[in-house]
Picture 1: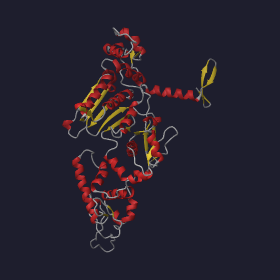
Picture 2: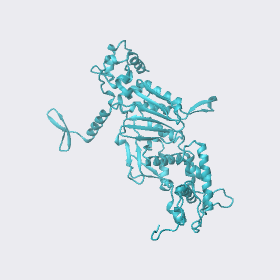
Picture 3: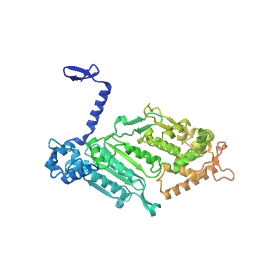
Length: 510
């Protein structure tokens, strides 16, 4: 009990104060107890609700490599074991018991024993939908099998042609297992797996993250939404069972594996979407250090070299910068990303980049957790003030697309060792915000539009092509001839043009 702001416990006839450390441990225990809903009792169940074969299968796994339990001849003999493992309490089955070895789990658990899988493609006829309803272990295997059947698979030259899925199989297995192991079983809702071939896999999971695992600072100029990796299981008794089947290792390798594979350039940046009663993990296809990131670093290579005292970025440093750049963009769009910590085994690169001034600590950093963001120049994409100072009203008369192209040219001129920008370079720079990464036809059409836009900007005198060069630079004299027209760009309706009005009625000043 509490009295006068202090906590006490009664021992015999005396009241003894509880230390702050003991109180904190008790509060953590209460919090875990509120969330450990796999031990809730299921009304209408009894000893007969268990499947003896499934129970003996679990005991067989439990006896590897040392025998610790005998195979049960019947459910009556198995009762002490079921109670010891929290599968049964006072003659009533728990959620855990039905999940592991119960008869007809859908009858007692409803949506909690279901896994809904979809392939999301534009053509309705090609969509594959499947509802899996079973105990937790078959759900894990069935979910993994569904995903492997519906993702892109390439062929490696190793060993005479080895199938190579778009995502590492170990990653898919861990994420699906974790979704079922850590979900909130107090919520009667299924787990969803949605596959967009060639793009991403999303796994929507009932539950939420603990508030102490979230680092949020959304009112700052640099919005931050980061998640601290944690090894502690949400459903500890279920995790204990899954560890017997080697479905959960208890080392927090879920998020750590995501970050490691991302920083090994095996996948693109993973992120989470958090809502009131569910968490969705997005596994993105592609590579972290993709063409857009390489193009970005190329446009800042002079700036980077100056910060590194004439040096260049190593590949691990490029990967760290790419992770932080994409994390910041994702955080700005309301997405949560995993915090880089010393446990991610990249603390050396983080320290070297911080000393060079290429990354810096965000104000939400604490003594325990450093939150890094990249140097501000590396995140700049618009140079409106500088371009308006060069071209005046002529710049304001351009539509947004043409101004964006001029910003790309300005960025190369200010921060790159190669200031000339070709239409192809600008297309690669601008394409990630406009279309699907692997859609070659759309990119080719976009490239033709960018090339046409450069011709229009050159005719207007805003950019020039130096002799013996295939790229463009800004024309420093482009703002002098204010009457020289600027050709229409991508969206003519958004251009600002000056026209001579027709004769107006007297007093009308329009």
